[in-house]
Image 1 (cartoon, one colour):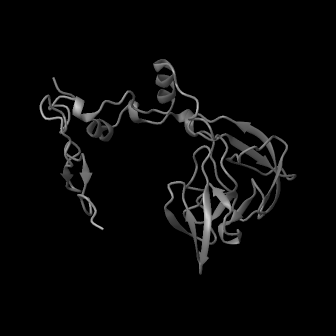
Image 2 (cartoon, helix red, strand yellow; image 1 turned 45 degrees about the horizontal axis):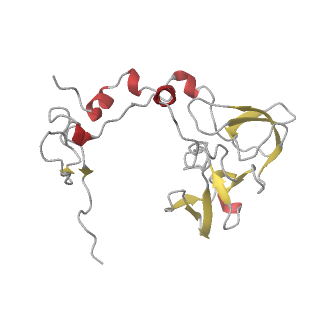
Image 3 (cartoon, helix red, strand yellow; image 1 turned 135 degrees about the horizontal axis):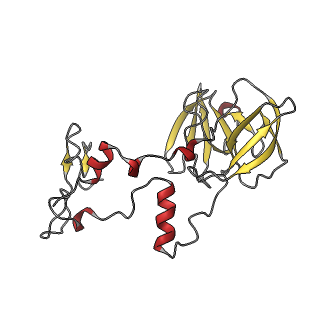
Length: 232
């Protein structure tokens, strides 16, 4: 008897694909229209993130949580509006070549980009009211000059350097993040379980799926702009 393919199961919803409530209890972001110095009072390992979460507090008792910069320690002081490692600044105030992470998409949203452990974007150039940033994927993306960022590189680098030697350890890593594991290659499935599956013809060819195709058919290339070898 066939099963729902992965796209259909994910679209249906269920405990396998739901993020645990525990993973999102700490809200990470920036304080709006507030400057001054803040001291790191605690560092927490979050279930739903690959970066440790630091809690900062000022002398008035106002606190907020943000992703920790590399080599941050409890008791360290950061500045909102500064340009040293760990400081929070507007991207338009930073020099070219500065490493940044937790970048806001729109000013005030608390950060949407470059939030994984050990990653950082690089400020490339300022053009009018936008700033060009080279993302960890080496692609260039534009942000508004008022978008806030954290200066430096995110902590948690090296988390994937140590190999996972036991399947049980991988199982629990994926379980706490509510990820489906293990994953099986589509060509190894039966034809009833996936459009790529079959016992015959394992020569994989690109398949073009329409944008409005049903979840059971939306595999392979989803409405690609072009296919085939790129001619120079």
